[in-house]
Length: 365
Image (cartoon, rainbow, N blue to C red; front, side, top):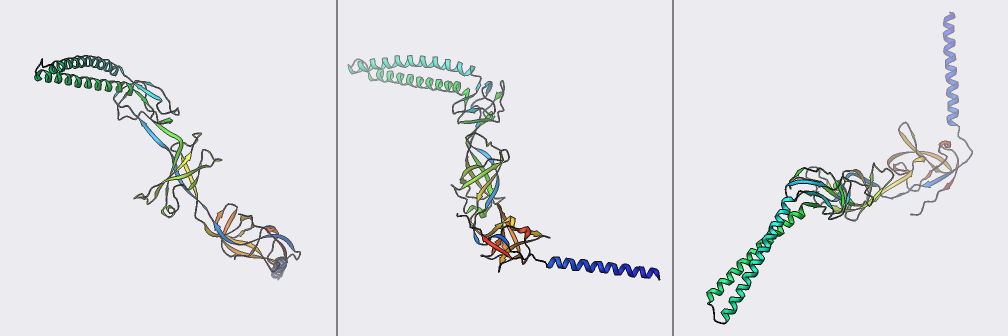
């Protein structure tokens, strides 16, 4: 009996506590501060917003010159290292030119001999021509002298061509840069046998560089030469490199269905280097959006709300959010143009609280 009374007492006590708690919570829930709260509001409005679109890409030189020798031979001197800045005509390496120099000396001697013979044959022809005019020699003798002179002239031209070739071989033994730029990928060493098919190094023209990226077809309509781009690289997190689109491939890649785009970016300090991974941003075409500051949005249990002013009171409105745009967020649904969205005092607001509002002026465009 005592035990039964004890159980009943516990049940009654628990019921009483629950009733008190419920009444207290309901009172707290129903209590709304009647003191008007001063708030700042902004009128919701749909406007044109241009969002940045980002693509990934890489850096390449505007011109990459592959350096090789025009003839096989032994490298006797390498004059540059990777990273050396060179101008057009700067010597990069020298090949063994002993045989070429010997060929020049031999060809020079041949030219000298051929010229002496031609001069003698030309003088002999002129004498025969004078005698022929006087009737002292037959025409056959004149023709023979003329033929001998022409043969000597041809031999002189051949000898001169051989000399020119030998001199070119000597000149080609010193390999020079065809462009201004930075030496890269140097593979040649002194004493190495180099053939024309071997790449000794490259010279990357880098005062300007190309940023190349693949672009989906929906953006090709307005990505045109002259469009401004912003380029960012992880190596320089605080820098934004500006450039302009220069080339848009008119045909999509057969496999990816993407279009190759190249933008030229000034690179006077050579900060951007071929092969770097980059992010390329362009401004998308304007899109109709309603934006509100992120700070005025409350999220509870996965649902988002803002407060608006209606009839002098704060009213909580559920909204659906879209894209983040800087410090703002897109409102997909829940607000209408002209709604007075409360921007501050969010933590002190309750649904139904009296407010006095001061409208924030929009910054002029």
